[in-house]
Image (spheres, rainbow, N blue to C red):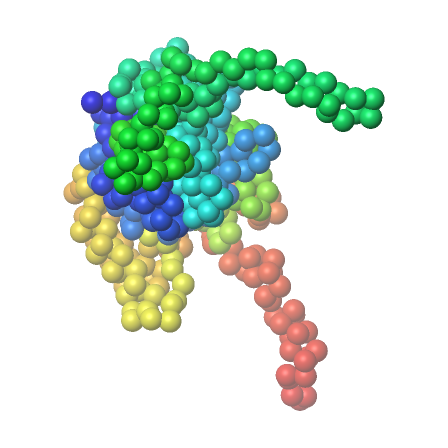
Length: 536
């Protein structure tokens, strides 16, 4: 058995539908149809190895697709190569729940920080991308010369295998699996057939000519001085043997062209190496997983922000230093802040004005846990994270055309989903809990949620506008482990986007209204300008 060069799991495995992939590759090799969409779909599938994370609980709230679009890229010589974004979404949203796999991935990231090795990984990605491109558009290429098209596929596959065997031999992390898999492939009989076939195609014979050129620059004489056939190649047949074989075939009523015979041999060789191509193509997604993380690190550092590989532990509090929200890259450079919990299962209530950064903080904490536990760089200069078995995020959602419930009803359904799927070690992010109803009713629901959360003991961050209620909770905590953070403000009542202990004294609704031009004087001016007010 050839060892699978799996770069995502501590216990190597083929994480895709091998049979379906083999059928598509066979069809593409024969030039039968465009297998691009089907190949993308199969390669996008990422079957987790024991992950209990459920993407539907956080994918939309953390804008995972936007994060991948903005921050996950693979660039070779200034050219951005396509990545399978669906695969990256699956891989990121199915964080490993065992420390062995987290550390296995972190070791690969650390080794890829070496510029020379990173360049080799980029080169391998480019080679495998070229191989996939040949399979994805076979009809157009095969119409030119089906034999050359098939030989090109075999040649690109061989170059990738040879590259893996030679360039990753000295690796100490999981990257060494590339070398080990290629080394085993190169010892197989089928690989010797592949080498012989490609050598036969490229080196059938050596010819030496003598050319006589006249004064006008034209060739006067062309004499073949030497012809040396590649007799050592296993596919070589001498001229008399070739003639004898052809006469024997013709005598039996058969007629084959040399091209047709070569195509038969090419197809037989492909049948021998087909099983190797499945893990090679799986590597495309795995390499993109790490190379895009390095691109994210480079982009953050270009903005003066630091990232880090998280210290993930079975237990212990959460601590994020100089945390930033990468979703804000579209708006410029995010303002980093620091946040920490006192206990491993703390419930943190966050208060402050609108536009103070509360929602962005929840997103940043969620993305730090997501990326950090995935084994990649967390968006923080230092990150200590608990190993969680799931992530649940609920934000204030906008109305939709087919929405049956109002804002409160939709939020309550999300809360029900939370307690239906939460584990004993989860990260919970609740934004503006129960803001869709009046304070007196909302506080009863919030108290119920706090009490039930305490039973399952996750680490939770909850934002709220109910400041009086927050102060009462701070004075008389109904459950153990409550922490309180508030947005720190400047003297001019603008947010610093930092968070300090305590409950905010005011939501600064009036100041926010003035900043947005929503006060009596401004609204009156707008009203009169459009003639909307009647004269007294």
